[in-house]
Image (cartoon, rainbow, N blue to C red; front, side, top):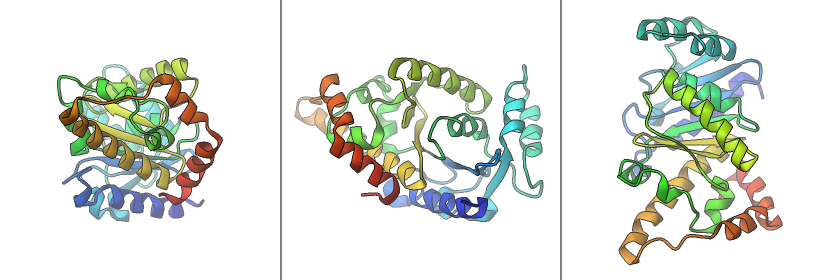
Length: 255
């Protein structure tokens, strides 16, 4: 797709994630991005709101410029401010989100073209508890496996920006060593959720399913606790031919 067509899909994804009734993000929370396929990517501008996002709230930046900035040692906050503005393809656009560094890492993972980062109430009520991400490490129902992948990638709390992107880079390597693939879900303790999709629709599906998982998980605590799938069951669901087919359909068409 052309960059403008990709931008249109990104804005739609952002507005879906920012719907107030879904409780995934409020005010200026969360950010989104999409790979243009030409060494640049779109990312939500700092201060913009997902639910009302339009073209004026999105910035196009250079992967190479963001990577070069992130590789510098001893970056100051002023260096980051200046560097992000210099990474803009169009210098008249707004400053990109400080999470631009994280999005650059995510968009370079295999088959990731759209990224949706949110702060869902249902997910964060668990990630901000003493249990952290642990309750999410096993599956409860088939659709969770089909949409969200075999297991989430977890990052302990790290300050947003360059530190978080470096922690994410290390976490991706550990995840790939363990599972032989990239994750579809990132859980950031005391922070929020990231959905990694081939398409904008898949990134939205992942975010909504992770929110559903968190709500069901919390509900199980009133009835004796979660009845998790075994790893054997999870792997079987993940590899069933009918579920593999359904996953491909969902990536493009949703539910």
